[in-house]
Length: 350
Ligand SMILES: [Mn+2]
Picture 1 (spheres, protein in one colour):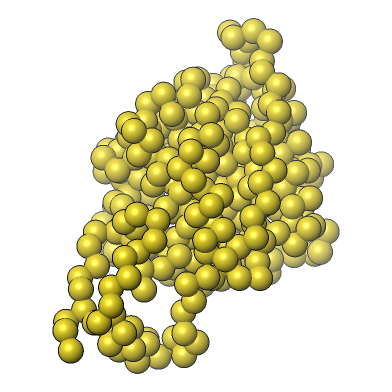
Picture 2 (tube, rainbow, N blue to C red; picture 1 turned 60 degrees about the horizontal axis):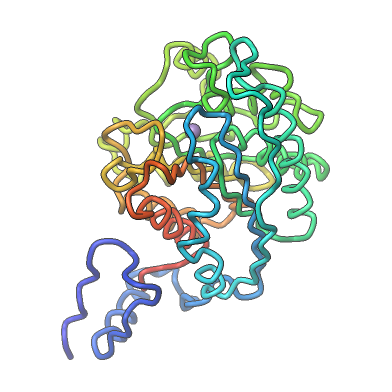
């Protein structure tokens, strides 16, 4: 018997992993024996019998940079739909929402730029996402900048609320996204969605979908933070919300941090939403985003996080945001985004 071939680097080569005959079976069997939980053989088609609905949200005016509104197209260029279908899922693509563009490029509203436009879009996003959930499908939301999370997570939370269930959250980001119009250094709403969901900030954002708050801090975990503003720091301490910063990930390792983050989100009775800002990733792996910060999640740390989430179960929606095609290099960030989506949907190395 030959030694099993080493699995290089990350999870994915081309679309399908090469069929490595010979050693693979032996390795596979021993893998099952080592992992005593894995009494059910892992499937190459984890999506069998499950449905995913894809919703593109080409909204970019929550940030200031052009290019983030083309994120959904970039993910589709990377063959998102086909690759999800290869996992066995039934895929329904709702296309991209029609987002009304702001009338004037420079129209700002105090300390929350394009407040009415973002608020109106988020109301529509919330309805769309809730409809997807009512259909028994997993919402997969493609941003767009991170302000869209105010709508998407409102939709999931609204679904849970109607069933008297609570919603948990895992938020991947370099930033806290917990500014308010009072604390924001930029006025950009993509720096405010998490605080709005927790009930703080502009009423037009906080009250999307007609109720607030959407989330309780005790069911929320933030992963990957390394650039937190002073006002956000104070809110985090006041709320006691759990942040797994890059410092802690360095110190304890991604595996331990994700176990704890998943545990926190899983305390909610209805499961949890996952929202992934690609600036959580290290800029070396994900150059295509508008607010890069050095020292982010490595390629493997990000995949491991997704793999652990799918193994744990309980994920009720997945969202990826802030892919900026104007800043990306050869669609590398969108390609990585698709890979992470596939890992979150159950694709595995073996
Ligand atoms: Mn963000």
